[in-house]
Image 1: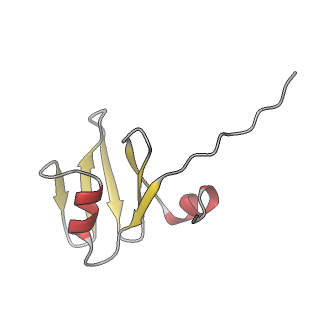
Image 2: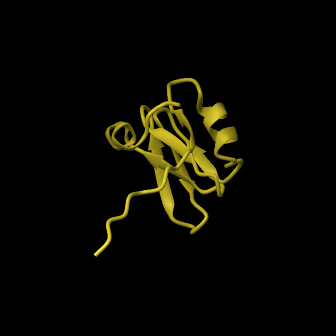
Length: 82
């Protein structure tokens, strides 16, 4: 039996705050495929699954262009700033 470790993954990330909705939309390249309200953004991912990013959540963009959102607790367990 052999042991394996997870390869280093570098992502671009931005945290949704009150007032930076446009920045998030540009970062995630969502354009008109997203709905905004006062506290969240609802969007469809590349697999046409609906996802929600709420204030305080992180928007993640992987090197292959895939995007997703993570709750702060999950983000802090997985990532650290370079």
